[in-house]
Length: 388
Image (tube, rainbow, N blue to C red):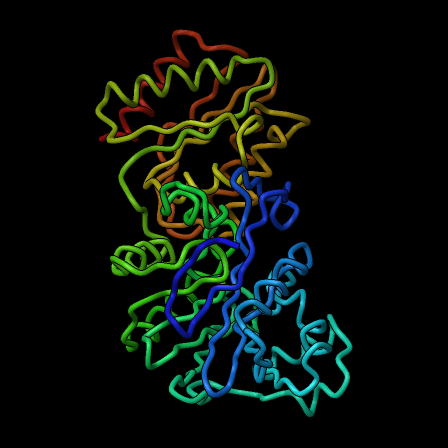
């Protein structure tokens, strides 16, 4: 178990998973993932969420060590996704008198995952603003629907000023990973929660009314210092505003000619004084990181060859991901390549015009097979437009 000190009465019982290959079967996690869970020891004992089935045995061992012979009175279920709810039925079987705390939607989904004997009698159904006294600790429940499932709620503990934030403020990486918080928290946010910016904004408004000293998420480190920094980033991300000025060049290339054009364009952008230029070969880059960079910067250039009377598939996949995550409020340039009937720009433009509040830069550049004097001049015009 990670050596995490919260307080004398709030104990970390989560588990680091260093063996997982893909989180949610789609996200590369080179430094693993943590499944965070907590127990509050008071007159009543309350467990805050369980963990993934991958971590069952370690979690129960951590729980029993923290209980030191006590029994569990309550389980608070903030989120029914299996990486946090995987052990609800096992815990209910081990502690048959334990009450399970959730909202109406929690129990609807719980019944889809598990058959728990006597669940209706064990269930404590809460709504916005309801409280639960454990003794010296009082929990207040705050509904957070669609951050990022409909049943999600967060929990504020009044005496220690702690916010149990569910998937909010989570990040990839185990707790013993020494890395910058923002990078992997950004990749986590935009790929997992990103579609639901309006709902995150609503939750941040509720959180602003609370006196918070510590944020305890379901993934990633406990946040104790400089909470304004983390909340500020979440506010930027969930309002779909760019985090910083810069240009992300997302390109795909079949035989290398579009890649050469991308390299040339990156040089042009830098010479023109672009604050920051980041580029990625979509065929060879982590898609989740590409989504992260698209949201991080205020401008983006899409470069791809035509393919089967459309656009090269990995570019279409990227554009579809952006659509799913509500990409908006950016300036976008388009460069297509085609040897006989260029079609890539038409497809890319159709996606881009479907995003909210997008400025489409002129000119849209067409390369015929490889760069020549005419298409290089058009690239220079686009570089000028994107940096002016």
